[in-house]
Length: 527
Image (tube, rainbow, N blue to C red):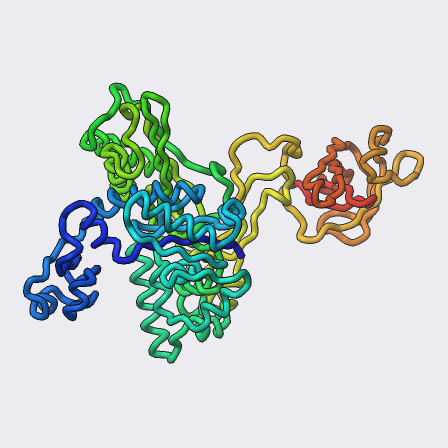
């Protein structure tokens, strides 16, 4: 389980309004979303005003209450000052939303000399950069780190499960990303309450398959989050499988109005390149004429998928970020005009959603989806698997087998050359279990599979299978052969050299065989 550091700035919608000069911290004030209050000042709290109150009710309690409309752009713009302080201590912080930041804690802990010095230095850097009070929490797992930040706690390694077990199930809402996931999580919490399940420990007392069968993808995502699995930050290496668009700016951009127009154009290009696929992170990178670079990473969905990123979502985040940079929030103002802008989507293709064909769904596709749903209802979501293509050097490594729903396994990209890859064609069928086979030369001597002795290997003339294989006799003649192709991967883990051969048989389909640990085995067959 990965250890995370989380920074939470309480009451951020109101703190952003104070920092922008919209209100004063000494008067009763509240931020509303046109329906209810989402942030309340300490002065208003002492007067009896509470979050989630209706505006009319709040004004009845406190007539001189200043009501401020929620403004996402203001929150994001003001939060850049906080991010500049966090970046002084923590490398690669990720914005979950303005007011909430998360990052891998292992590197910063080593750099600062421990969890407590890391929390102290981060808090001090935020106060120095923005004047805001940031709460820092460190724990194993995303949810535990977020909840630890709300109480300014450091959870020892291995103690997150005990810490989470007593937390109310409503705590899942603190890590939900996007309105769709928030609504689904709230519905899950309400339904569990009707069943008498009120804490995370009671929720984890259910089996994962039972939760998946009853609540579907949203329930499984909530279960994985409560169980400490990484459902916010992807495991894919940076830039692996990324989709990016960029543009050199001529003339350079100096105003937020021009930057917003450019952001819309690039957002549409990025959405087109994603082609209805999901991504988990949006990276905004700007470079000035003088060569200075500014970069921020935003979480746009969890790794279980959700709603595909729309051009409007991208435009909003890019516009907020450029507005903060061009107006000099946080860091010093750009040392020149913006000369280049790049948008990069990370964690692409992790969602469970599938794009809609140009002419709508076909009967075959609808039938396949019905069969998949039926199998999941009979066997459970965890017991139905799908096979996806991925990058690799051998046929077995190019197939990724994963659960059909809510899997956080990241497929390796197929793009780019795979040095040392086995030449084509690929076998039509790859066996689930390899079958041992013996090769003999013209003199009837066994041909060893040791890689170091393949230089003198003569043409194989005969084979014998240790077990029957469909369509292939137990013994037969070898007409032609190709190879050998040695392959040595993960030598640092003690894996030995594998040797591949292609055989054309007299009265059977061609075979692909592999030599492992002095033994030849059938890897697959060709049509």
